[in-house]
Image (cartoon, rainbow, N blue to C red; front, side, top):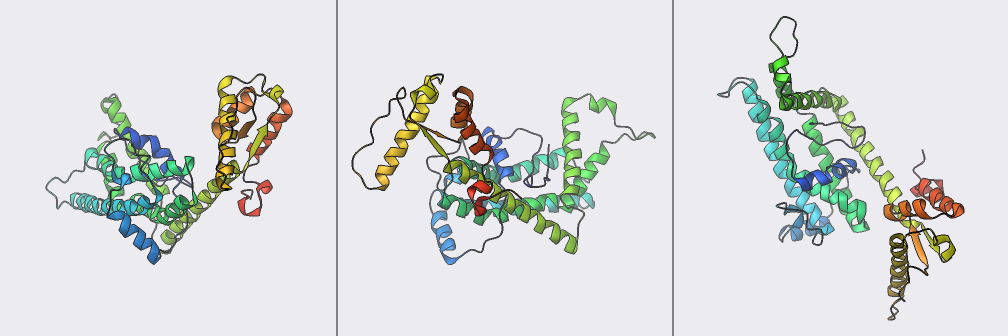
Length: 351
């Protein structure tokens, strides 16, 4: 259903209908990561955007699944800028169309469901695709460069989607659709015949949820109250992003190297191979950083050492298969105290 509210992240629409599978896969990332405060663009930023916009941009290639091997942070800003401009233009045209229909200047003065929510879906889909992919990358392959570009783009993304939740023409159109579905009988009950149709039920739910979400999203606010509401929304988004960044950093900071094979006696081959490979990769990185030309020795998964981290697959397998309770306690405590006072004041998410 279409929704434009959430204390932290739900500033985007979701409508009834079929969304491309790749967009749906990243929708949660899109909503979970709409955050950060406004950052002024510098001349270097503009130069980078201009250079990137003149070449192929994989964030704009949305004909199939994302081209993850080609996605680089430098492509994100020009893609978002271009897509937001298109989205804003198309939404303005939709608002004008809805307004003309509502005041009777259009040929057909009755607003239909298909002329509203599916159109919003189309308008938003390209931005949600690109921004969702960026959010996914940030969650699984974060870097300082990606964070910087992401933070530069986020305020405009939040503001652009806020425009949907606070659109009076869109809200009036949804209320009009809701009114059309009300039974004209004296008791004002909903038409039972229509509710027997599953699609009609979903459409009604989408409209009802959208109206409620827009009310919670500030559609009725004006002047200073509206400005303050939007300031709070951006601030909450900024805090959410900082919270998530701190958790990501704390997750990366922890490692536990085990060289006692007895502790691994109950662990299946697959987790041991994963941890042995992690230790081998660590040794290789150390040699690369120190400019050593020798290659790291291959680690036997049955002999070790094994390097455990707090990344999902590593943590879950450790808690499930390592039978030694003190070892599991160390890993568990590290996981549950991420981004707390144990990680330093600048990474502490504890209020």
